[in-house]
Length: 271
Length: 238
Image 1: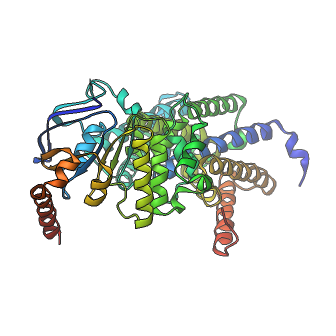
Image 2 (image 1 turned 180 degrees about the vertical axis):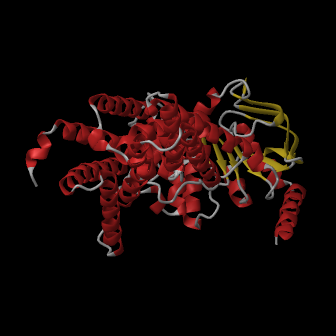
């Protein structure tokens, strides 16, 4: 492998942003996976597609409108789910299809697809500018601070809502906090793998890590290591072989999951 | 007085679950709550724990109406009947006990409590890998970690083997007699209630007995009445 590529500024930005996004998706994704909300990230990503289309139509930076639309739709669907007692998977399906539908209608109104929309659909980590890299780092730092501050409440209400409530935790507020964090994480991560593959970063490293880790923190650390490894290796390999980074990152993650399953099946994996 | 329940009535989807029940629990009491399935024991606990707010009447903990403040929850520990959690959840025994620990509390308490409940050797094991009896001791440890004044247990040994059940009962007895923790415990095990509890509340939508356990168990008519109600419920279910 040529080390020359590590000297490029765009590669520095891609690797730093990618690693930060990997950490973010692992940490927030672990709470979602354990709440059986694995596809919630996918649903928010699809709703953000509507937000991106809205931004492009209005001439506003698309990520800002995507943040607004994603957070609003995540909160609305959570409220609707609680109020009308709709199951988690059905509410995810509603959110997922409504975001895409709104996006398609808005794109139609704007007169058709533009080149910009493809970079949001499939990610463009090698094109991340300095401003975007700073945005990714700031969002990652902010979310990690919130997780540290509310760690016990988030972990307890994920483990058992009823017991957390009895211990005096405002479970509903924590649920809203987690969906808002998921909304911010999804939109921040769109630059890496795009709308269509975002849930892979939420789910695959965490499903793999759960097979290795005993405790929660240990599992979270393993997930972060797996995710950062897949992202860094994926960016470098994709550049060297001129293939899509998003697809490479996700396939590497799936490879890690497959190897872990193989080890477990062979009885070589014990916690 | 630790708990005061006054004229509590609860309707659940139009059906009367609890009908005007009143009782009090004093500091240091060990109250055994008995009644057939569907008698309203879990509904009563849900109200006391703030999980069900759609009730009429007054429930007070430590002299304050629980509708006005949730602060009392910090002074009680709760052990559910069958704790619902994802069996593959990556949490060790220590993680689970730590979840119960409030911010600023002494984390050093955890080791002492794990030892007291004979689960210190399991501290690094995943909670989902333990037997039912071991899991229940972990949930007691979690309930005790904030040094509660009251422990509420909802049929805590359902599905637990006999040996673990007896160990569990001896722990409860020690918590009450040595540490002075007030215990409110629902159970179908009349023999255990007779041995452990100093007060009995017999519930079946209404409270048809509340008083010293000695008085309940020495009154053959009351015990027979309870046994018949339980048997009818059993026959109805099968």
